Length: 481
Ligand SMILES: Cc1ncc(COP(=O)(O)O)c(C=O)c1O
Image 1 (cartoon, rainbow, N blue to C red):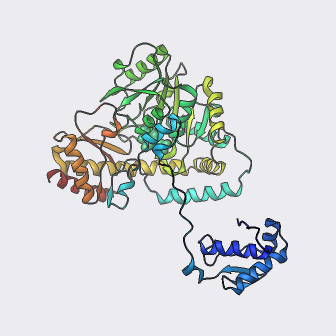
Image 2: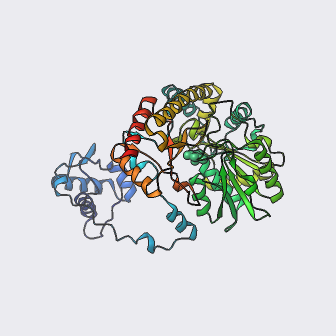
Image 3: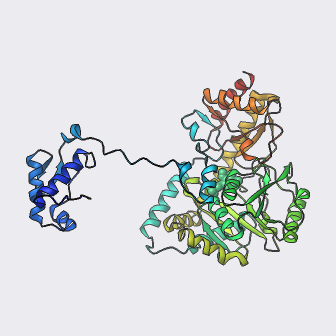
């Protein structure tokens, strides 16, 4: 406990005065236990008798109660007399603070309303990115976490990620994504967002050109812009990134792509375009980041192998995340790195945070090894397919041709265009829906170049089919209002 003596008069009175002040200005609230006299005396460099005398003085005045020597507590009456601590010194407004350019850019980009937060409490929230809850997964996770905590190593973890998890990631990638990687190629990160941050640290200098699909994942754009990249967009159509529109020359340092399920349109990059993209990257001396955020969930056929599995020239930095297949609060993901980049990425990770928390990594390795993870994937794919089917049917029934669904057979969201509306009308639609308990999200914030027509990003993972139907009924009514 911090107290400052005023060096006026006997020591025990100085201490009693300092404690009284702490009680009166509310720093010591009623029922707070005062430190044991022996410990307090040692901490303050006073004799124990001095502390005892100070406590007796406070008890006599009624500021503390209890038996001196066996536990003293701030008296309840003090609540009535306590004044709030002096107002904190006037804070400088953020706009007046001297920040680095990166700090200023981060602030400018920061969404004060983090997507979806404003809709908490709404009955139907179609926020993209909410996970699907699975009670069986929750109990398996609890078991693994308990086990991992009981066997935890207390030393710093390997900054590259614990070997057990890297091994499980490799086996999973080989089974489900067609990627043949060794544990040395894998770096465990705290989600896709950190993977982008490390890629910016390792691959980009200020002002370097980065290419994004347009529309694209906003999290990637915001991070790269905050790090000073010169971000440009490239068109997307029904087959994914339009590779014939890729820039010529060697001016692009990095391109971020979502070939398995273009975010947010849902297009799957065709094989000829995959080959073209890899060839372009090689010729342009450009790194490719493959963000395989939800390639796992495909409902019409087996998931397509990842772009990384075709990468013969070691151009692709692959990113996977557990945010979609498990839950985003886990904050764990992984990168598969070309051998030449491995050291630099591990060094950047080590500098950044010394590695991801070992207990969660061990629990996750256990979850995958036990088979509970893939069991969850199977259950999730089934449930998501049913939700998607219910959503599509309800859109057709309640919204008719006021909504045009972009064709997509994968993922946890769909993109619904509003062909008859202006952008201003779509914003009014979102407000009307919110007033009726329905959270909707526009696609416009995910674009560099304004879209010719507005669209909605409808996340369906978190709502059961009946709720999706009710939500679409409200959407239909709002469209007609
Ligand atoms: C395209 C894309 N990539 C990655 C992520 C996941 O990011 P993270 O792993 O940081 O949770 C998301 C989440 O919404 C996404 O939409």
